[in-house]
Image 1 (cartoon, rainbow, N blue to C red):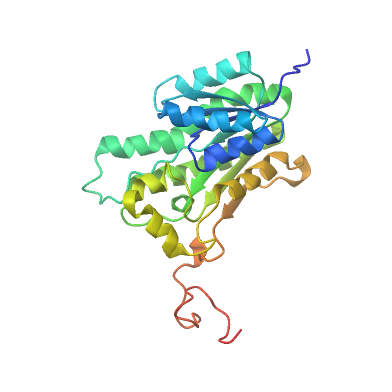
Image 2 (cartoon, rainbow, N blue to C red; image 1 turned 180 degrees about the horizontal axis):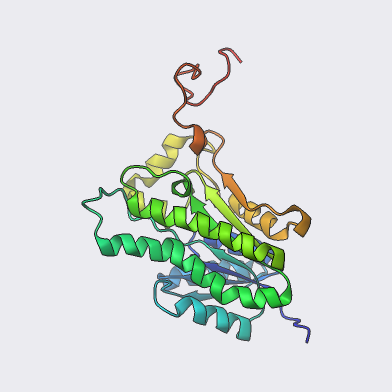
Length: 276
């Protein structure tokens, strides 16, 4: 039987930054966007309303993704009542702040893993059977620098994001040949997201953005175009892992440059000869 309903873009972690902007982009492209977030019903309604005011189709759902069965029930309800999930975005972070090992309780470490890694597993486990039956689908997973480099004070976050990256690779290896596109997006820089970094920095947020200068912070609407592009890639040219950062930032693999080639003190990571 042909399903004539709109394809669905499901985003788990639909804040005012990446998740909300990605939902708006997919809705503009003809999808029905389902936005799920843990709290702030008014903020969720505002995001849905903005999409609808722009002529798009959207709905929202408050969701505690760490609860057993919550993700699974959401996927089942969307498939049954709204439409086929063509693209799912897992956009939940697992950042608990900068903590020493001593100041990281067992339960806090485990919560990071549940949100950062286990949630991706659960979403794939719930959504992939229908996608495989249809012969197509996309799982986009927002990630962070900690997925590829563990720093001091990031025990929970690095473990969660590193596991997220490896899980995406295993999912890609198993389900890519079955028509499911799994993409892991390393966001290697600060995002203009009031619900995440904005909350973390509090009253220092605006001064922090100002210190980064013009175009020194990732615009989530620009990043949403990358998510859209990944979901539209033809099967003969899929990207599995991409990274994004402001042009002023040094890439994660080169942010501690060899001083013998770091020719300009005010531009760390620049390895070219002086004067060029």
